[in-house]
Length: 132
Image (cartoon, one colour):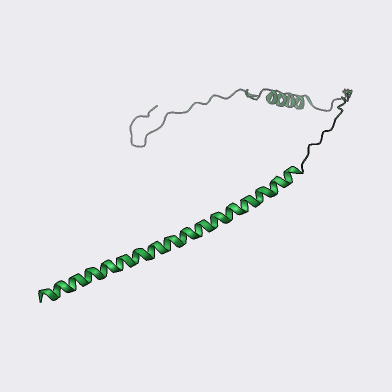
């Protein structure tokens, strides 16, 4: 009886080992197939890159620099400022315009003085004295 149990155990171990070996063979075959596909894709990409590079080199050989002499001439214009003698802006409008010009020419400075505000101390809701 013990011989048959041992025989069955040995057969199970041999079957497990054989199944494991077959699984390793299958995994190896799958990995080889994946590597073959990667190699084919890489070779195709290299071939396409080489063809594009050859086309670029051919198009670059056709390019030649063109040298042109450009004669620059200075044109002078005389601008005359017309002074209008009749002003239609009120004195308040002139002050607003001057304030805007001053503010535009001095961007870091405010055009009017900054008002000082006093913040009252906080009030507590539970009857304690106010905190500063």
